[in-house]
Length: 136
Ligand code: SF4
Ligand code: SF4
Image (tube, rainbow, N blue to C red; front, side):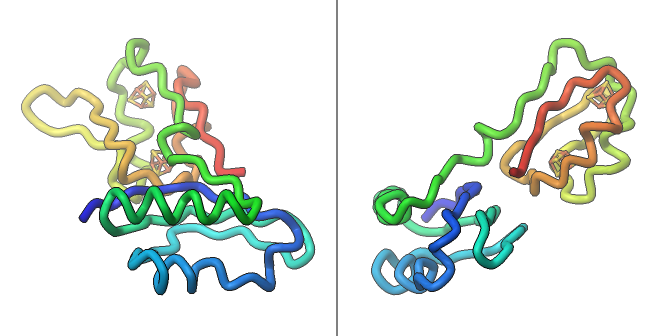
């Protein structure tokens, strides 16, 4: 079993399709919805954490894309210029998800992208503009 986060973009006509029901029933995937922006009749976006075997998750993603849902691994929405970081800690203070941390003894920034919830709060918090992170 693995856990992996994906951002899904739904076309406007997808609202009446039970896609998540099929992921659970047909692919034995557990779904955790971490963020949702859904407007009836318009495009919608979800951040999902999928838990299952690698083969089932891959098959589930293929099922979604066959229904015109755009599916991207979370990491693809995250750009971070780590080499320019001065370890000031500003971004750590706003990252409630715990993706950005600094610990003793070196107090260097650590970015665990697998914990990111795409809140985008670190983007304006960094004085050097090192983050490019977009949910939509
Ligand atoms: S977007 Fe930035 S602040 Fe928000 S969870 Fe991800 S790393 Fe943390
Ligand atoms: S706010 Fe920017 S410079 Fe400061 S620790 Fe975070 S990424 Fe590095």
